Amino acid sequence: MPETRVDSEPEQTAPSATEALGNTTLPVVVYSPESPLSHPGKLITEVFSDLYRCRELIWILFQRDLKAQFRQSYLGYIWLFLPPVMTTAVWLFLNSQKVIAIEDPGMPYPLFVITGSVIWQTFVKLLQSPLVAFNDGKPVFMKLKVPPEAFIAAGTARATFEFLIYAIVLIPAFFLFQVVPPWTIVLVPVALLALFALGTALGLLLVPLGSLYGDIAKAIPIIMGFLMYVAPVVYPPPQAGLAAQVIRWNPMTPILMGTRDMLISGSLAHLLAIVIITAVSCLVIFISLLAIRIVMPHLVARMGM
Picture (tube, rainbow, N blue to C red):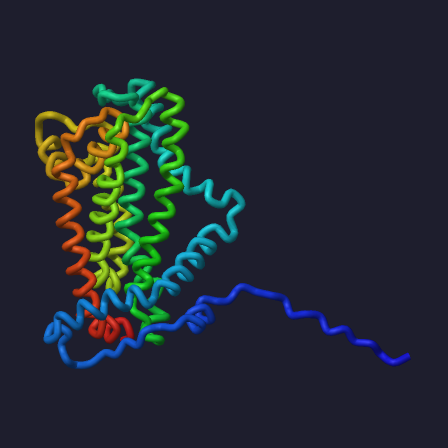
């Protein structure tokens, strides 16, 4: 009998990052010896027009990173809930066993801790994401001349998504302690805008130096672990002493305390500080994006060595 051959359809696989980039229309980035500062208006236009043209690439990178994060994880997104929940559990245990003495924060202490933990974990993610995304994108934008801002924006988008997952743990906590948020809850987005602006601004400032020296990325978790205790994350700010002065001048203090007040007590005592932090942080973000574009040729030359 004649041999019969059945051609099976090829297995469908997800496109790789390089293929995804190849299917996306990318802006052309040309490095020239002329300083971009000679045409500041053109520089500003290029940075923000590149971000707009790369919106599809940003979405592709965001999806890729999100899937890769939990690709071989059985529990998946549940791992995102654990940092604020475990932090809250540890401090509740220490407080209940009288290992530490916490002053009355003016609200249920578990709500105080879990709200502070969610905000702080988000801040750390926002601080780390620009440098991590920039370093992850090196093999691509050094070859294809893809604007690095696309990778930075994708990293910030992932930090935003993780914040939404973090925030879910607050809903059962409010029901458990029977706390009804006051009308000031409508102003919470103002405080969150300050949080995202401050974290992104500080993260962008680390990109030029952190892209050349891996010590910066290794030092961030260690430093942030220490700085958590000079911010009102798990205990209310003291009223006197050196610690009180340090915490008072910490830019995260108005964001932490202001967000709690808007969610629970209804006070707007920190609103002005939050608005100032937002304005200054947005200015720093704007300047940092321009600075990264200016030093990019030098970074590429150093990283290619």
